[in-house]
Length: 167
Image 1 (cartoon, rainbow, N blue to C red):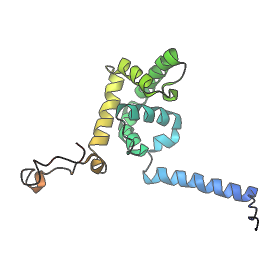
Image 2: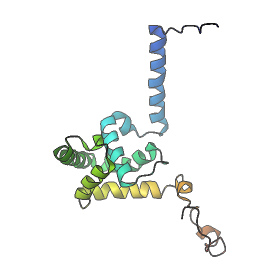
Image 3: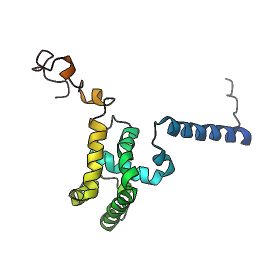
Image 4: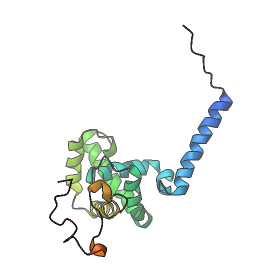
């Protein structure tokens, strides 16, 4: 039985690997896979991502689609979004002793969302997510939607009476 060779990691190799990982992260931001604001403000991105995933929970949708949906809102109303998130965190700390994103139980976060569901902040976030997720042709296959049928003559001769897979 032979012993496996011992792998050592020199300081130089460690720095080169971590540098490559950092460069890869910057490249993702530069190519548009991650919004630049999310790289610049990771705490804000984490908080908004938790909120977005609670409003429209889809495990199969990547985080970048949620964050991209909220980018226009942050460009136009960054301070209002930060204030809305601070209010949500304040409510969460008062009820659970933790920030909203730190609450593990889905039902507890849902109760907090029900408290703010009629606020302009919630309406803005929900509206941006609605259009950003459900009006995104890249995501339509995940929902079983084939897109507009108007260009092909409508649904009448294209399975109008067929039951979709997702029902």
